[in-house]
Image 1 (spheres, rainbow, N blue to C red):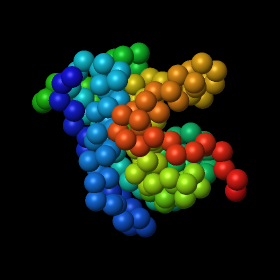
Image 2: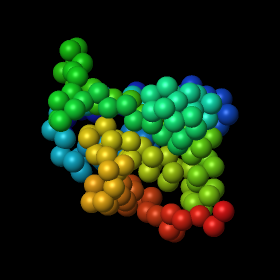
Image 3: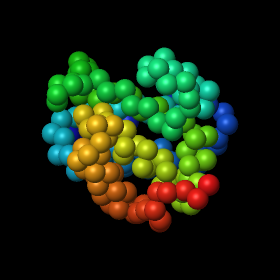
Image 4: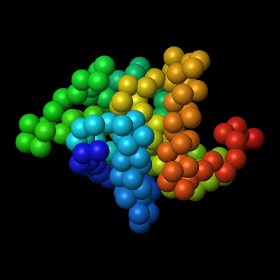
Length: 166
């Protein structure tokens, strides 16, 4: 695997970003690309936002007027990606994470913030590579299996089911 550049920016103030979270995101991006045998250098942008910011983006880009946990903005299609002409890296796209939503979901599912952010990152990376769980069926199952494989590899296995009693 070639060089991978993950550009991370914090655009929210509600949640303090724990030490090591940025490194976890980088490790997660690497793990997904390695699992998928992505042969090129790659560039990914990750932004931490609040619920209001992600709701606005969800409304603007998906016509859904609600806060969500993560949004993926792929810059490639059918294995074709924009390229950074200075580095030759394939620009995979942008991941936008709602940190307040990640905190809320970690509590709901009874696991760590690290597990939640790692999962959301793996999920979004797969979207950037062309996977789509919204089709349902086998696509959804395959994507879920890949997400869990990455979580196991990073030492963040699922601690329980993903159904909530709330």
